[in-house]
Length: 107
Image 1: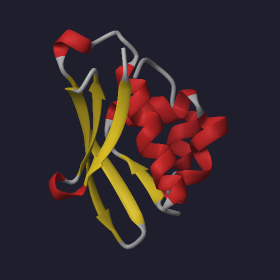
Image 2: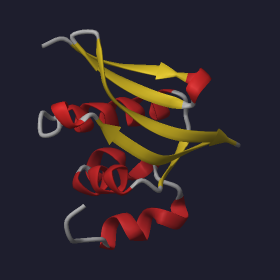
Image 3: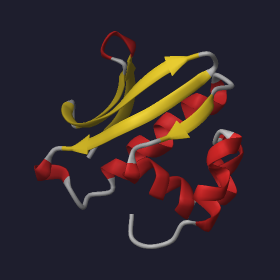
Image 4: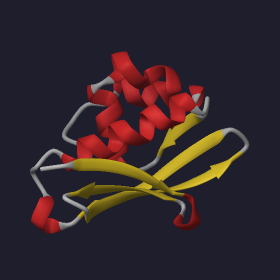
């Protein structure tokens, strides 16, 4: 299965494709050096395949490459950063870092 994360700035989202089929996306707002990720969606056919994690990683790595702060309002993105805080906590806006590090529960 060939998987790729693509940035689609015209629709303000990152998209994950598998075998050239759109499998999901992460919607964002970009302003003042900050990317606010507010919604992540994976097509039901692809749920449980790890594509949401691939998408989150793609968004976060691109944010790092562009030197953007991340505001993870999407519960999935927040949970992904929480589970991988050693890799991505430094990207999170300072006012949300406590929420990432102190959060628990299933996200």
